[in-house]
Length: 477
Image (cartoon, rainbow, N blue to C red):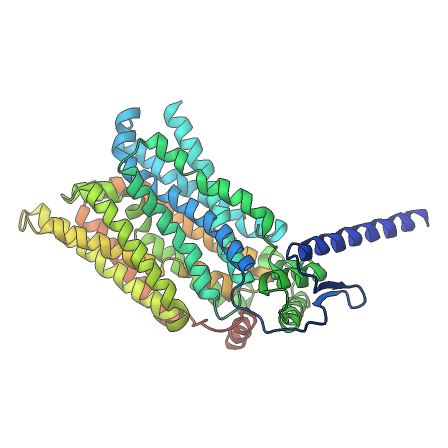
């Protein structure tokens, strides 16, 4: 009996702590009409009445900014090696093989991080010179493997269906803009200074984490329903009627518990096979299409093609910015599938164009024109990736229910990062083997991605995560 009393008191204490946390979350808004209702165990507003849910609030903006800091930092890590390749190799006396290891080791770290990214997110919520150089980039890749997945999932779970695509793609576009920042600034500053500048997004993110709420879906998943409602009010506005959304999330999560014990093998059930193959396939083919090669070594590619690396990298940065903004504007109007098709087609054609430029250069058939062809090809490639490269992560957040989302994220990111590492490490050797052939191979993989997208990728625009899952489950049955 004493032991039962102690357990009961501990449960009461934990419940009281959660209630206090909920009240603290509510008090951040600073509005008197926010109240915590002990009778119905929920959160509501006072007599001033309820209003419809807003697609954008200041807290939602702050939460998205925090996620954007994550992806911008990831972009800085990706873009760091491109403008610094020649200076690092010269200062530290690195061979091509040693620099290839340095460039690709980010993907090895991401590979390790990706393997546990889903389960880490489920568990805790969404919130010698060459040797030292490699160790730093490896650890950076490890954190990026977790955080890049986390950013997409978090934003998809805190936004409404009307703006989910726009917000998620904006956050992921910061990856490209982070790389662009490295391209531009790295053309003018020392590689050590550039490394210090790349720490700024992480420091900013650390400060912002204290002011944002947890994902409502994750709170429902772990049974913290009172905090779920408080978080929704915090995100949607203090007068928003969140009752329908809260009920929908709780019912959805509860329904999943009835047929799943949340084991890693649950992802291999029949209803998840098609979305798993689709997302993993798109990620793998996109990585085999050469994105890591152009992101990590675009400066060297420009030089090999006879183009100034500084001019090329700065122009790439501008192109990624413009196309990225265009993609963010169109995603919730045109949908995910059309943008991914256009992106895959663009990656296919631009890789082929770069291959043609090297073919012309090798045979001295058009000495003046081949650098221009290569320049246009690289710009088209990076622009095409800016348009649709972030969409697989958005699909990952939309196609899987919360009970298997962690397992799906780990598997898909693991496969994507492994193929990304293969490309990043072997590219410098393959381009010496055949600069023409390697880009034709990239083009072939991008064409395969186009076919996969056309035949397997569903449209998810304007639908709640619950509606998407219901349709997929129905089609699988």
